[in-house]
Image (cartoon, rainbow over all chains, first blue to last red; front, side, top):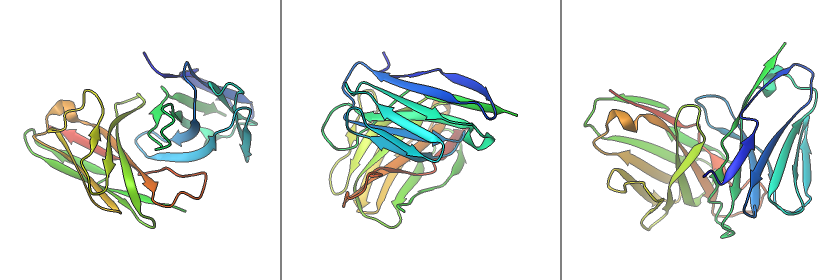
Length: 113
Length: 118
């Protein structure tokens, strides 16, 4: 079974609308990373969360880690075509502190005009 | 910011040949690099952890004789796919962990290498 579940698997959103992507684990997430990937390209770092209840924002993207550190959400406000891509959450579930990340299943975001 | 370079970005080879993919940290030293494999429309699967000066640690189910990893210096790790077959065709991505971890963005990914085995 997948240790990190992302939902939804795909998302089609009209430009200007808000959206949320979730990342859930049955294990404690000692370091939760959000990345964006264009198909066939590398990963672009978005944000990292470590503390329960932590929330970070960058431009129109906000990421949160719940108090129990088992779920994270990525929220995009007023989506734009540039937000289209694959969003991946990755987490250190071992607590070895070596950044050995397990990745979620990914969410493919499409923005329609 | 930290940059990780992968080369080649694309490679096509004949079945039975070996292919080497390089992962370089351009402006920082990395004692640890990770190699991932990504199938079409799938997530990243960790293959192995590459440690400078020591043997790589492979994940369960990954053949170490098939995927040779060498981390010869603090800025370079190589993945060699030996005797490649069509089922080895995939997108391979590396990431590097800086020796000096002072910022939140401690793990940097390369742009990936797409291997096609004919």
